[in-house]
Image 1 (cartoon, rainbow, N blue to C red):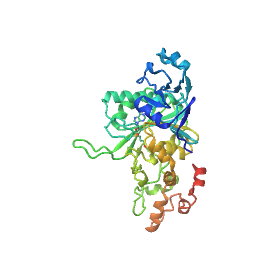
Image 2 (cartoon, rainbow, N blue to C red; image 1 turned 90 degrees about the horizontal axis):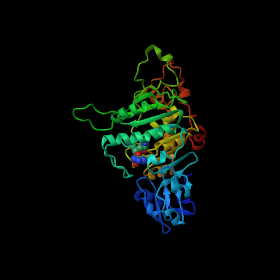
Image 3 (tube, rainbow, N blue to C red; image 1 turned 135 degrees about the horizontal axis):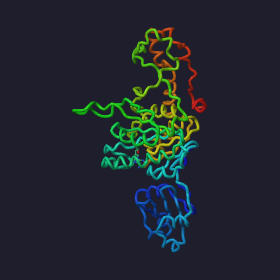
Image 4 (cartoon, rainbow, N blue to C red; image 1 turned 180 degrees about the vertical axis):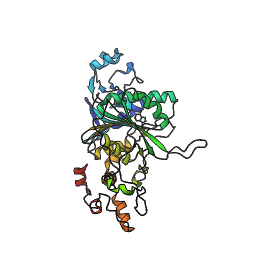
Length: 397
Ligand SMILES: C[S@@+](CC[C@H](N)C(=O)[O-])C[C@H]1O[C@@H](n2cnc3c(N)ncnc32)[C@H](O)[C@@H]1O
């Protein structure tokens, strides 16, 4: 269930719109009173009359008795007289909460060592346009130091044995990976084969994103990578690799996952097209979440975007928290998860098996029965027991 504003803060009800106005302008008129958002950039000691403060990690509310506070110009003095309130999620489900606001502000509100899996897909400093109005072109040095600031916070929130994943262009993950490597244990640089620009003259064609995988401490608490189907011809369903006399050695549950992922499709679903072009594939987030977390674990993503991490976490029965400057797409997406559920059922039915149902069907149509040497019975692989309806979905995810 999704809850939206207005939210109740101390003795005043504050609308969601007012919270957004604070974020944008630093102040807003609410019920005729002057309310102020507190961040280190917005500090107006002369406005201490009837103010509502939102600090880095808490929302504070002060009402009335203005003179008593007017002389206080430091945060500590204000805190003593302020009523401390928790940060307000813009919406929540039974498993998760999304906060609309700056990632650093959000991260600093999260307790230390509570997160099992942290994932970040930040803006890549390419000058892209975001619906949130985020400015995506900074000096390289500034971009890296900003990244280091939220990475430090993510590391702090991770439990020992928890996993950190950073999604970025190789150019940025190179320095950022070196930085994280001083604090966490490096596990993998995963190359995800997705073409993201046109060929550039004088350069190799950029065709992979970097997914860095670290663990806090020496080994991960949870690590159970999916197995993937063997690649088959899209027309006849025949194997693209020849296993020769080793067919009987092939694990019927699929091939070992490597650190090069070539099977992550771009986001194509008609329903998602109106979303920001930066949305990640549900298959990618499902794979990461299923590999490094268990049901009930807590997943964190400070750059929610269209909410792919949150949806994958929710539908896989993980708890989740995260932030985003503009959560409108996330809220809209969560208002109808039918398409995402169907998509996830499809994703789940095509993993942890050596041949997908689709490939077995193609083979059958093209008169290519599965060689008996594979220890996989076609009738089992193509049986109809995968969850189809929502009720079954609840049980299986
Ligand atoms: C690359 S997109 C993330 C896409 C997301 N992984 C998905 O699958 O939809 C990066 C997002 O970070 C958000 N963002 C940028 N700066 C932010 C900040 N300081 N705090 C929170 N979110 C921020 C942008 O609005 C954008 O939606």
